[in-house]
Image 1 (cartoon, rainbow, N blue to C red):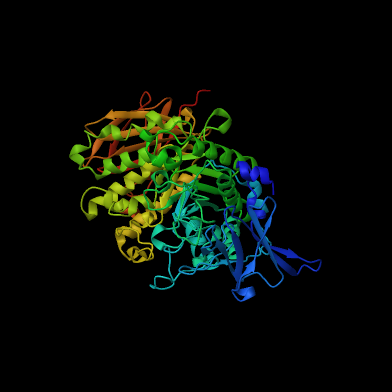
Image 2: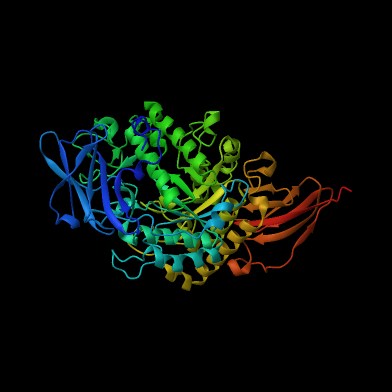
Length: 605
């Protein structure tokens, strides 16, 4: 390991030195395990584990005295261990390994020795063709691994990583998702934190199996042309005393003062001014990308890294901002085709600009403004939507400032916020046509797409990590129809480059109608190099007739409608061609409806 780089926060491979590492003999058999940890303020440290009867085996100081090492001939892969760390006053706490590759299921806290060379990937073809999808459709299915499907109603009943491959992958392909985003898989003690307060930043949670099983799952995803994005938390960690908190008897990873050290979630904030902390987090990010072939990281709570405690009035945390820049640049240099996405609700400039241009170096930023404005609009009674008309036009006024992704994430279906379908105004029957029109607006709007699991079912119950999705909803005709609609819309998005190819080029979007306030009608054109699509929307509760004027317009050929009978609407799914006169076409739109048309221009030859 580059020790100077470790101290100055410049390295991405600290996990290859620190932690528990297997040494093999010439015959390939495990001969010994080397344990190493960084604990500069500890007075002494011992390793306790299955291989020594949980009795103390002292570690020795190595290098400059801030690192500790112990070599065991008896330790083997799969065995448990802890570090017993004594502070300067002689008090001790048994800690899991900060760089450990595996951990026990809560409430147990031991680390587990893992052989990281055992599994061999078979995804070379996928890795060569992988890209950041900036000019390709990106349709992300956000997943909480333990509550998509469950083998029983028991709280601790989960399918493992291997079992989920057989359950989940056919569903994703059938439903038209080409990327999967998984809520944090680092080990964590409290189920209700969903993994966002971690204790094992290098340990795939044992809720769902082992490191090798997770590698198998990712391998199977790639075999099915599905990318995997993992939620990564570089801002804070769990307060549990067996993990990172006061690791060597001092605030080694966190701030020593609670005014900036404690987060709003009751966790501890990482101290990004310390090089050792930066190297820890950079190495954790690299670990998931390198060791598990993860295709992207969605970084959580970036606003809390940009501003002190996430509050602009407290000023920019320049150390954390510099950390993000250096980490993102380093990850992209090592893995140019991975996706780095920021969950950031601030207006801090340049989040998705390259680092060399002064930006933070993310590929995408979640468009929280679009999400909030659009959902607020659809909560509103139709008679007030004329007043709020420009909540739906505002997003394009700032859209080209960043490379945005449109998220309907887990945060929008919990804690009393109601599910996406429930947010639609009106009674049960009124919600479905509005939800169909809403989703067609989302999929036509520039920006990549993300939907949380269950949204496609028309879920009414708020998500609960202890229960699987309400799959019984698909026995009800309205939900069957809505699910079919979402499946077809997803595939339409994947198959039509006009909806994605020029997402971040102003040539890819043009307003056709954005001042029909009283009618609550909107229309815009999406373009690619070979295709033009007109998207029209009526978000009022009355039928509307509008005139559409498009450049070189000859005919409009309807290719998708929220009002097809098979989706619960009123119209037969059949060809509908509208001829234009002097580039003007007249359309009639049913209440709460949306339609896509292929634009056939005049032949200019």
